[in-house]
Image (cartoon, rainbow, N blue to C red; front, side, top):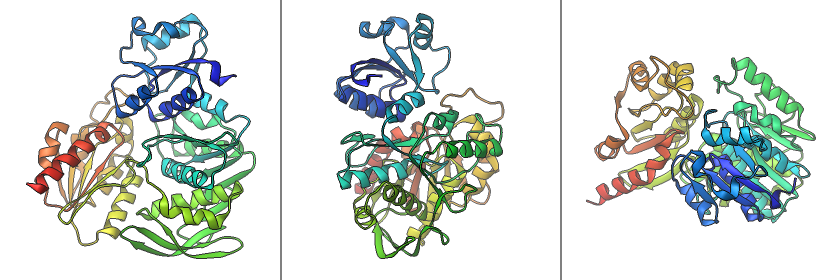
Length: 448
């Protein structure tokens, strides 16, 4: 396929995975158009590149340039199957492909580095991208998050390597045949797609079988490959971990050497694990480990991944995408280690009715670790409500701590009255669109 001379229409173009591909294609010279439900910062950045985006799902809203049968239509599985534009193209006989299939096509003929895992995909992919960028290698990276400095989720300086996330949702990662792949973790999730945890584990094994050259796995996982760990000896592992306010120092053990007193500029043991995975992947792709470790100190960070929005004497505000009990626990443990003397408040917006149902007890348990819990209603995303599954049901199971359920409209005023110094805003829904406003409100309150 000649990607550069194709006309594309993206249904759900504002999604983080969709927008990175759209950005790449338009920069290659392709004609790119799209639809999404609502405006966003991501969509504004696409429009700045000249991409036309419509916010009306009717067929009448389609731009004339994409009405042709030759338009290639890309869609996200998150759209409903009764979407009028989607069905127009199906009935007309256009080529209609999932985002994951197009991503797989874009990696063909390149050295593909794919990051899989229930947790850590985006941060690991972003660190790996940073390492390649600093090395001046020929690469293109599609990232499931936005860099804090450049505000982009796609970076490119050539096509020898492609760096991608291998997403288990909707079995999307089966579209990839990576040269080098990493699996960071396998925890039960997406049980609306998989029957149970065993089915999810089987999917990861099948993905691993598609890797053409090197599979890199966290040591505790039941997969064969080059191992890494921040907790025990492995092919690549770290010890002498020393957290500081700006990151973490550590010693790196490889099969051939020990690199002492290395520094990574992010908080959290889980982030150090992500950095180690990225180091091993880049090293297996042929980059110098000594040079790679130096560049960990300049990683710009990813928005909504333990992002510190306020760091003042009386208030610390942290924003994170955590939406699974394991991820929430990782945030809590990082905050406990970094701010051991301070009380901690969590604002949590549950994501998906099915995930809330499947992990209700686990959510309640981990949220109970915080000194104060503020819940928002469940963000439904692609789902319809499930009877009896709501934020109130989750709230009733949280024990041993202060807990309340509020609306987004009430949240800002409430946070100005919170006594806890540390506030963590967590969730994968539209809570992310609120954090800038919440930051400004809290900053103004502190000044006055």
